[in-house]
Amino acid sequence: MKRPPLACLLTFASLLALAENRMPAHEPVLEPIPLWPGLAPGDDGKLGPEHDSTKHDPNAKPRTEVIRLANVSTPTVTVYRPEPDRANGTAIVVCPGGGYHILAWDLEGTEVCEWLKGLGVTAVLLKYRVPGRGAQRHTASLQDAQRALGLVRHRAREWNLDPQRIGILGFSAGGHLAAAASNQFETRSYPPLDDADRTSCRPDFTVLIYPAYLVVKENPSKLAPEIAVSAATPPAFMVMTQDDQIGVENVFTYGLALKAVKVPFEAHVYPKGGHGYGLRPSAHAVSTWPQRAEEWLARRGLLKAK
Image 1 (tube, rainbow, N blue to C red):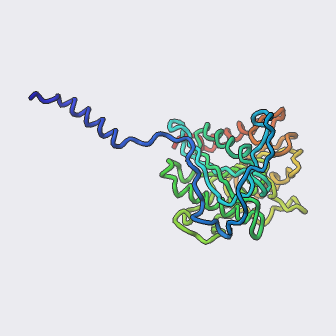
Image 2 (image 1 turned 60 degrees about the horizontal axis):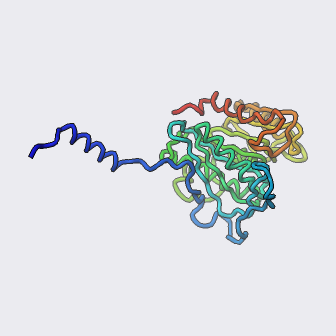
Image 3 (image 1 turned 45 degrees about the horizontal axis):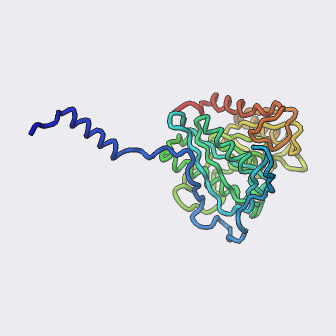
C-alpha cells in the first residue's frame, strides 16, 4: 500500500495538535465570581433579598433611568474582557456609587466597564456590600474592595493581566471607597483567608469621579481619617464640578494632600454638571471627562500593550 506523503502526515499531526490544545472561545463577560467563601466577614445573611429599588417607567428613554441595587449581601466581581487583539494587560476595579445605600449599577458600573473594555482595559465590576454596616458605613465595603484588588492581582496570569497595572475607579461613594482602598492597603481590614489575601491589595493608580466623603464635613480643608495619604498613595486622576452639592473641596483637599507628599495627580474641575452623570452625555463640558481620563491613562503607558 502506498504511504501518504510526509507533508500530509505533518499537516494532519499539526491539525490534531491544534484541536487538542484549542483555547476556549473568548468570553467578553465572565460569570460573576463570589468574593468570599461563604458569608462575608461579619455578615449574618439576614439582610433580605437583593433587588433593584428603582420604580422604572416603561416609557422612559434608554439610558435615562438607573438600576439601583439594594440589599447587597453577596459581594462579587464580574470581569469584562476586551477583545484579545486589543487587550493591553491593564485592569481597573470599578466601584459604583450610591451613598453606601445602593449601587448605581448601570450608570456607574456596567456602562463604565463596557467603555473601559473598548480601551483594551480589563474592567472588574465590584458589587460591594450595601447598605453600609460595621463600625463605619464603609467598613464592609472596604473589606470587599481590598479582597477584590488582591483577587485580581492573584489571578493576573490567568486573566492575562500585568500585576503592576491594576487600578481602581470609583464614583461618588464609590470614589470614597476607591480612595480609602488607595490609602489602606498595608494591612487587611479582615483576617486573611487565602493566597489572594496574601497578595498586595494596593492599587497602582486611582480614578475618582465626583468622589464623596473624602473630607471632614465640618472642615472641608481636612481629609477624613480613613483617607490617610502618604508617599505610597498611588497616582490619581480626578473629576468634579463646582456646582456639585457634594463639594468640590473633595478633589481640592485630596489633591493638595497628594502634592504635599509628591504623589502625581491630575484634576479636572468644571463649572457646571452637578453630580451623578456617569458616562452619560449632557450639554456641559464635564461630559468630556472620559476623553481626559483616556488621555491620562495613555500618558501613563497604561493603554499600551505589555
